[in-house]
Amino acid sequence: MGTMTISVDDTIEQKFRARAKKVHGERKGSLGQAVTEAMDLWIAENDQREIAQSALALMENGHDLGKRKYRTRDDLHDR
Image (cartoon, rainbow, N blue to C red; front, top):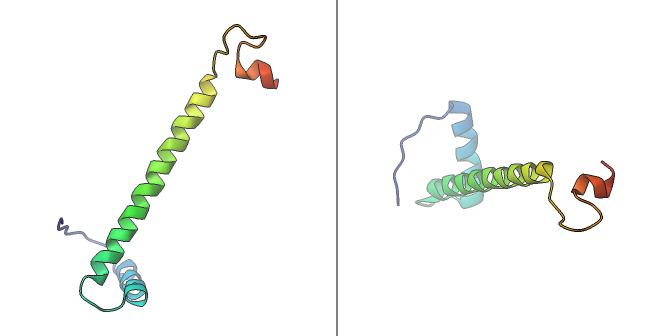
């Protein structure tokens, strides 16, 4: 397990600590558990954003459909 030293805005810290206390209680390690969940959620959201951007880039490039009547996706959908 890693140790991090970070600086956070005071109001954000107070709100986060209060929410973490409500959700996880006041037992030892509850703040760390809440921070871990928040970081995991942030990573998942950013990963999903990257996946969506790369999928959109692939769609913009189009696809060659081979020896069919339509050469590109744009021809098929009249775009």
